[in-house]
Image (cartoon, rainbow, N blue to C red; front, side, top):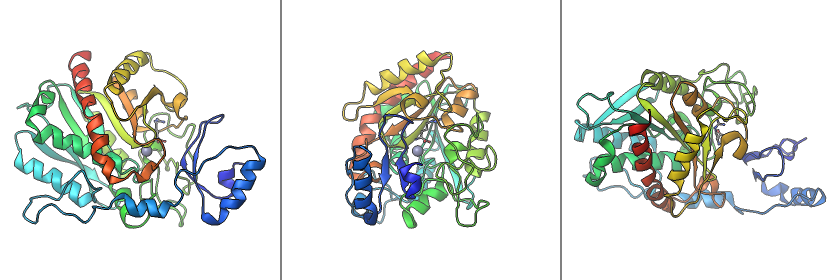
Length: 372
Ligand code: ARG
Ligand code: ZN
């Protein structure tokens, strides 16, 4: 029996089966007992976050500093923002730059929040150029992902020097794929991961959206238990969020040449397949581009590799599904950090993480313009 099951511990970062580490959340009252148990079993351990609540309290210190009262939006990259701020900014951009930006509503979440995608294109007939899709916030607690995705939006739209990134490519960016979970992680449970849909268990809500996509759905690394953090749902695309996203992408699958989904944490560039240690025929192309990309990073070093091999096997991921529908380049990037703060990455790191990553978009755009 796994220690995490015996003691009902929350797994923050799963391990591969053998010889790798994992991150667990330990209630203070179990600390001594677990230390003894691990010592007896010869399991090495370190305490990375001694007081999680304190880290949470310190994560978003500037949350109440607002843009000036007259500013048309309330968005920054020095704090983590609620959904309404992110959506307000997307809306502002669509209104302010109508020839560049369109706000596309692709559906509704379980709790009836709109699912917003921003298209950024300088073309008079969008849909003729190759396109890149980027999403964040599939997992609610991974706050750095929506922050980085919205930074990309800001840079592509509002910084004239970046206009060259629009020359050959259209961009579709969805900063928050799981808005219900995202809000829940602000209001109620900072470590919430899943959607918020009702399940067959009255005590447990939510499906893991990254186990709910329809390729090899229900395979390794998924659960049929609604109380599990990796609950796969009742069927592929049971969740309105994954269903709407996949339908939208499918409609554009001829143009979208690169699918990038932002998660945290670990600093990995993960390449399909993730459902099993196995490799698409053009794996080497994906590997080469990922390497070229992470070699641009200065501050945060990433490991590149096959998802199931480097991390663990998990079926029903959005990256596998995107690859399966013919999108040549499909990646999951696990953003900073490597575990010091984990999901509770301080807001002071939003800009460093975003700025370090941004040059990757040029690498992607250059390849996508010619690849296929
Ligand atoms: N941390 C991500 C998750 O567990 C990794 C997903 C990688 N992709 C995959 N298809 N397994 O959802
Ligand atoms: Zn994730």
